[in-house]
Length: 121
Length: 110
Image 1 (spheres, rainbow over the protein chains, first blue to last red):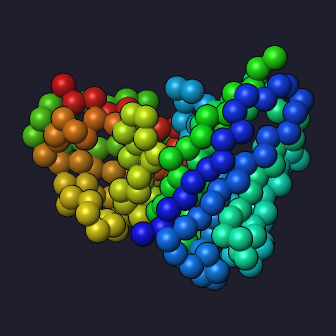
Image 2: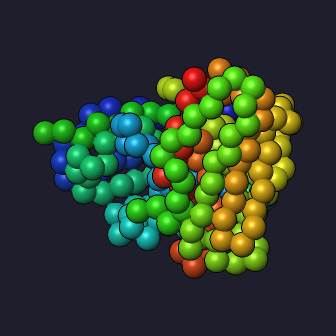
Protein backbone atom coordinates (compact mmCIF):
# COMPACT_ATOMS: atom_id res chain seq x y z
CA UNK A 1 0.00 0.00 0.00
CA UNK A 2 1.51 3.27 -1.12
CA UNK A 3 1.87 5.88 1.62
CA UNK A 4 2.70 9.55 1.29
CA UNK A 5 3.79 11.79 4.14
CA UNK A 6 4.37 15.51 3.96
CA UNK A 7 7.03 17.28 6.00
CA UNK A 8 5.88 19.88 8.53
CA UNK A 9 7.18 23.37 7.87
CA UNK A 10 4.97 25.11 10.43
CA UNK A 11 4.81 28.89 10.63
CA UNK A 12 6.33 31.12 7.99
CA UNK A 13 6.77 34.88 7.84
CA UNK A 14 5.72 36.84 4.75
CA UNK A 15 8.37 36.90 2.01
CA UNK A 16 9.97 33.65 3.24
CA UNK A 17 10.29 30.49 1.16
CA UNK A 18 8.11 27.47 1.82
CA UNK A 19 9.89 24.15 1.44
CA UNK A 20 7.91 20.93 1.57
CA UNK A 21 8.93 17.33 1.03
CA UNK A 22 6.71 14.34 0.40
CA UNK A 23 8.13 11.00 1.48
CA UNK A 24 6.81 8.01 -0.43
CA UNK A 25 6.84 4.48 0.93
CA UNK A 26 5.25 1.12 0.25
CA UNK A 27 5.81 1.03 -3.49
CA UNK A 28 8.18 1.55 -6.35
CA UNK A 29 8.87 5.22 -6.70
CA UNK A 30 10.50 4.71 -10.05
CA UNK A 31 7.37 3.50 -11.81
CA UNK A 32 7.48 5.50 -15.02
CA UNK A 33 3.73 5.75 -15.27
CA UNK A 34 3.36 7.91 -12.21
CA UNK A 35 3.02 11.63 -11.68
CA UNK A 36 3.54 13.25 -8.30
CA UNK A 37 1.83 16.47 -7.36
CA UNK A 38 0.98 19.07 -4.79
CA UNK A 39 -2.53 20.36 -4.10
CA UNK A 40 -3.43 22.97 -1.51
CA UNK A 41 -6.59 24.03 0.28
CA UNK A 42 -6.91 27.36 2.07
CA UNK A 43 -9.00 27.19 5.25
CA UNK A 44 -12.67 26.80 4.36
CA UNK A 45 -11.99 26.92 0.62
CA UNK A 46 -11.59 24.55 -2.31
CA UNK A 47 -8.73 22.59 -3.79
CA UNK A 48 -6.03 24.22 -5.91
CA UNK A 49 -3.45 22.29 -7.88
CA UNK A 50 0.06 23.70 -7.54
CA UNK A 51 2.42 21.53 -9.57
CA UNK A 52 3.21 18.00 -10.72
CA UNK A 53 6.35 16.16 -11.69
CA UNK A 54 6.60 13.05 -13.84
CA UNK A 55 8.82 10.21 -12.74
CA UNK A 56 11.29 11.20 -15.48
CA UNK A 57 11.56 14.73 -14.06
CA UNK A 58 9.24 16.60 -16.46
CA UNK A 59 7.43 19.32 -14.54
CA UNK A 60 4.02 20.97 -14.82
CA UNK A 61 2.97 24.14 -13.02
CA UNK A 62 -0.20 26.04 -12.28
CA UNK A 63 0.21 29.16 -14.42
CA UNK A 64 -0.96 31.38 -11.57
CA UNK A 65 1.85 30.15 -9.31
CA UNK A 66 4.53 29.23 -11.82
CA UNK A 67 6.75 32.25 -11.18
CA UNK A 68 7.13 31.31 -7.52
CA UNK A 69 7.10 27.51 -7.55
CA UNK A 70 9.66 24.77 -8.13
CA UNK A 71 8.86 21.06 -7.94
CA UNK A 72 11.53 18.40 -8.01
CA UNK A 73 11.86 14.66 -7.59
CA UNK A 74 14.54 12.44 -6.06
CA UNK A 75 13.78 8.89 -7.09
CA UNK A 76 16.82 7.48 -5.33
CA UNK A 77 15.56 8.85 -2.02
CA UNK A 78 11.85 8.20 -2.68
CA UNK A 79 10.69 11.75 -2.21
CA UNK A 80 9.62 14.80 -4.13
CA UNK A 81 9.67 18.39 -3.05
CA UNK A 82 8.03 21.78 -3.46
CA UNK A 83 9.45 25.24 -3.02
CA UNK A 84 7.21 28.31 -2.99
CA UNK A 85 8.97 31.65 -2.88
CA UNK A 86 7.86 34.97 -1.42
CA UNK A 87 4.93 33.61 0.55
CA UNK A 88 2.09 35.83 1.73
CA UNK A 89 -0.93 35.25 3.93
CA UNK A 90 -2.77 34.07 0.83
CA UNK A 91 -0.51 31.00 0.78
CA UNK A 92 -1.85 29.84 4.13
CA UNK A 93 -3.39 26.45 3.43
CA UNK A 94 -3.28 22.73 4.00
CA UNK A 95 -0.79 21.35 1.49
CA UNK A 96 -1.32 17.82 0.21
CA UNK A 97 1.06 15.69 -1.79
CA UNK A 98 -0.48 13.04 -4.00
CA UNK A 99 0.17 10.62 -6.83
CA UNK A 100 -1.70 10.71 -10.12
CA UNK A 101 -1.45 8.56 -13.21
CA UNK A 102 -1.02 6.49 -15.27
CA UNK A 103 -1.36 9.45 -17.62
CA UNK A 104 -1.42 13.15 -16.84
CA UNK A 105 -5.21 13.12 -16.51
CA UNK A 106 -5.24 10.02 -14.36
CA UNK A 107 -6.77 10.50 -10.93
CA UNK A 108 -5.01 11.49 -7.73
CA UNK A 109 -5.35 8.09 -6.14
CA UNK A 110 -2.98 8.28 -3.19
CA UNK A 111 -2.81 11.33 -0.93
CA UNK A 112 -0.79 12.39 2.06
CA UNK A 113 -2.67 13.44 5.17
CA UNK A 114 -1.90 17.10 4.50
CA UNK A 115 0.20 19.62 6.38
CA UNK A 116 -1.00 23.03 7.51
CA UNK A 117 1.20 25.91 6.47
CA UNK A 118 0.52 29.23 8.15
CA UNK A 119 2.00 32.48 6.88
CA UNK A 120 1.81 35.24 9.44
CA UNK A 121 3.90 38.12 10.66
CA UNK B 1 -9.99 31.00 -10.34
CA UNK B 2 -11.79 27.79 -11.24
CA UNK B 3 -12.77 27.31 -14.82
CA UNK B 4 -14.90 24.37 -13.81
CA UNK B 5 -18.19 25.44 -12.28
CA UNK B 6 -20.04 23.44 -9.64
CA UNK B 7 -23.06 24.40 -7.58
CA UNK B 8 -21.91 25.51 -4.11
CA UNK B 9 -24.35 23.22 -2.38
CA UNK B 10 -26.89 20.46 -2.90
CA UNK B 11 -29.06 18.65 -0.41
CA UNK B 12 -31.30 15.63 -0.18
CA UNK B 13 -32.99 13.31 2.23
CA UNK B 14 -31.90 9.75 2.98
CA UNK B 15 -32.72 7.42 0.10
CA UNK B 16 -33.01 10.20 -2.46
CA UNK B 17 -30.93 10.68 -5.59
CA UNK B 18 -28.93 13.85 -6.07
CA UNK B 19 -26.73 15.06 -8.90
CA UNK B 20 -23.82 17.47 -8.91
CA UNK B 21 -22.91 19.20 -12.13
CA UNK B 22 -19.50 20.33 -13.34
CA UNK B 23 -19.15 22.47 -16.42
CA UNK B 24 -16.72 24.81 -18.05
CA UNK B 25 -14.11 25.72 -20.56
CA UNK B 26 -11.51 23.29 -19.25
CA UNK B 27 -13.35 20.51 -21.04
CA UNK B 28 -11.56 21.64 -24.16
CA UNK B 29 -10.56 18.37 -25.73
CA UNK B 30 -12.19 15.13 -26.67
CA UNK B 31 -9.54 13.47 -24.55
CA UNK B 32 -10.51 15.38 -21.41
CA UNK B 33 -11.69 13.05 -18.73
CA UNK B 34 -13.17 14.05 -15.41
CA UNK B 35 -12.39 12.73 -11.97
CA UNK B 36 -14.56 13.25 -8.92
CA UNK B 37 -13.33 13.46 -5.34
CA UNK B 38 -15.12 13.22 -2.03
CA UNK B 39 -13.67 15.06 0.93
CA UNK B 40 -14.98 14.28 4.39
CA UNK B 41 -14.35 16.94 7.05
CA UNK B 42 -10.76 17.09 8.19
CA UNK B 43 -9.52 14.46 5.74
CA UNK B 44 -7.71 14.31 2.43
CA UNK B 45 -9.81 13.99 -0.71
CA UNK B 46 -10.58 10.51 -1.99
CA UNK B 47 -11.16 9.60 -5.62
CA UNK B 48 -14.75 8.59 -6.18
CA UNK B 49 -14.98 8.46 -9.98
CA UNK B 50 -12.19 8.52 -12.57
CA UNK B 51 -12.14 8.54 -16.34
CA UNK B 52 -15.63 10.11 -16.40
CA UNK B 53 -17.52 7.08 -15.17
CA UNK B 54 -15.18 4.51 -13.61
CA UNK B 55 -15.37 3.60 -9.93
CA UNK B 56 -12.27 2.54 -8.00
CA UNK B 57 -12.66 -0.70 -6.12
CA UNK B 58 -14.43 -0.16 -2.84
CA UNK B 59 -16.59 2.74 -4.03
CA UNK B 60 -20.26 1.76 -3.84
CA UNK B 61 -22.22 1.62 -7.07
CA UNK B 62 -24.55 4.26 -5.61
CA UNK B 63 -22.00 6.70 -7.03
CA UNK B 64 -21.94 7.16 -10.78
CA UNK B 65 -20.42 9.64 -13.20
CA UNK B 66 -21.07 10.83 -16.71
CA UNK B 67 -19.53 13.28 -19.17
CA UNK B 68 -21.00 15.00 -22.20
CA UNK B 69 -19.47 17.85 -24.14
CA UNK B 70 -18.43 20.65 -21.80
CA UNK B 71 -20.09 19.23 -18.74
CA UNK B 72 -19.99 16.29 -16.37
CA UNK B 73 -22.20 15.01 -13.59
CA UNK B 74 -21.88 12.99 -10.43
CA UNK B 75 -24.97 11.15 -9.29
CA UNK B 76 -25.49 9.72 -5.83
CA UNK B 77 -28.45 7.42 -5.36
CA UNK B 78 -29.80 5.96 -2.14
CA UNK B 79 -28.43 8.92 -0.22
CA UNK B 80 -26.97 8.10 3.20
CA UNK B 81 -26.01 10.36 6.07
CA UNK B 82 -22.38 9.33 5.72
CA UNK B 83 -22.34 10.75 2.19
CA UNK B 84 -22.34 14.26 3.65
CA UNK B 85 -19.12 15.77 2.37
CA UNK B 86 -17.58 18.16 -0.12
CA UNK B 87 -17.30 16.95 -3.71
CA UNK B 88 -14.89 18.21 -6.34
CA UNK B 89 -14.60 17.58 -10.05
CA UNK B 90 -11.25 17.88 -11.77
CA UNK B 91 -9.82 17.56 -15.24
CA UNK B 92 -6.43 17.91 -16.92
CA UNK B 93 -6.74 21.08 -18.98
CA UNK B 94 -4.72 20.58 -22.15
CA UNK B 95 -4.56 24.33 -22.81
CA UNK B 96 -3.18 25.14 -19.36
CA UNK B 97 -1.22 21.88 -19.30
CA UNK B 98 -2.31 21.33 -15.75
CA UNK B 99 -5.07 20.29 -13.40
CA UNK B 100 -8.17 22.34 -12.83
CA UNK B 101 -10.51 21.67 -9.93
CA UNK B 102 -14.08 22.77 -9.67
CA UNK B 103 -14.96 25.06 -6.79
CA UNK B 104 -16.51 22.22 -4.81
CA UNK B 105 -20.05 21.29 -3.81
CA UNK B 106 -21.16 20.74 -0.25
CA UNK B 107 -23.65 17.90 0.07
CA UNK B 108 -26.01 18.07 3.01
CA UNK B 109 -28.14 15.08 3.94
CA UNK B 110 -31.24 16.46 5.61
